[in-house]
Image 1: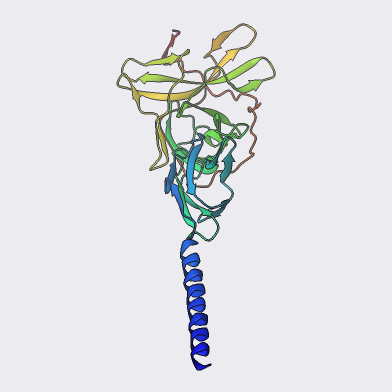
Image 2: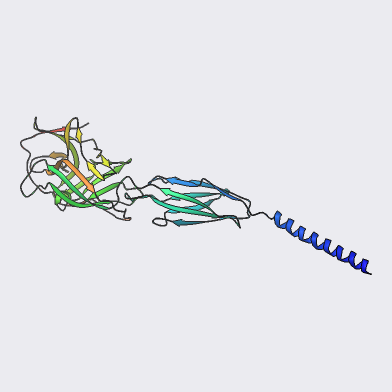
Length: 313
């Protein structure tokens, strides 16, 4: 009886031990799901609009993503790729902030696997958003009480498209006049075809550039050339500089819309050389609409002392 009891207990112990070992072995076989994401960092230029992909490697049944922001918000868009469930497509809005870059995080989760964070970085903008500006310049012809050597106004980008195609400068030359500087291919330019001002009697004002030769007393207008206006993103400064060793000036040149003849007798509006424009560092303001200025042209003077040359290429 005692021996039979002993054998029974021994068998029970063996069975219990086997069960425990089995459970432990099963637990050991249930590994945590793996999860890795490449690349670990995505870097975008300020005005980059191309998509970039993250590749998710996991043996979990499914995975999810979440986006968080260190600066600003809602500028990152993520979607799973339709034809590849293991890829996440990342796109960012353009960054019009000239003051700072911005950072966000995409967190990938897959079952009980350790989450993986991907850093998304976007550079600050190399060109301005809506801001105030201050300008200094030498009037080509100075009339007491009419031509100012310094003034302030607003620099306003249009936002009818995602990238500004032009900027409006208000209060040009300290008057109720707006001028438009175009933004083409990453450069600021004058646009010889855009009518800046209009007089109901049939005269149109167009922003042109030219050079001034004080020794020869000559003004040269380059009628069919748009002038690139150098811009320093670090100092937020526009400067006209020189052309062929001569100072460059900007002026609203007047044309008789009916006859097609340029007018220099009686009309000469807001002409400046040694012009320098500095704008403040301000975040881009969206959905600002600006239309061409329809102000009457102001008659200031006739530059009789200078020979006017029109270069028509």
